[in-house]
Amino acid sequence: MSPGDDPAARWAVRLARARRAERLLIRLGWLVIAVSAIGIVAEIVAIASGYDDVADGFVVLAGLVLGGILTGAVAFGSGVNVGINAERLEREIARDVTPSGGADPGSRP
Image (tube, rainbow, N blue to C red; front, side):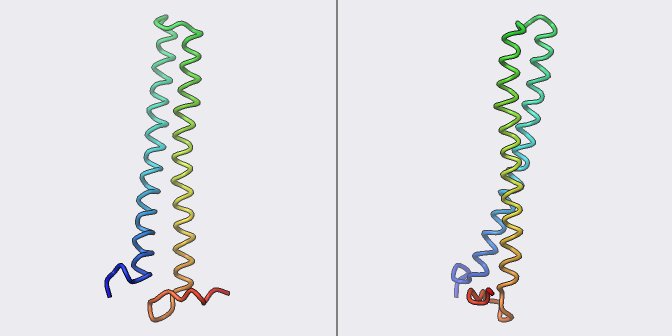
């Protein structure tokens, strides 16, 4: 029997992949938020120094907030969601595993 035939091994691989995706999405979210915050600070400095017009600066700031910060928040939230669902799936699998080590799909109440 190959590892691909074992349902428990397949679920373990899927859970590991979900955990990696969770970490990646959370890190990506923080990275996008940080880069956007740096852009906001840079644009505020450009406005304050007179390099950029105030009206144009507000358009850039609105774009950074809406495009950058919210995108980072969505990526972070998606990572958290993947992690929560992986945890839920892990508990379901642990509850459904029989003493022989195989999954018993008929054991649910």
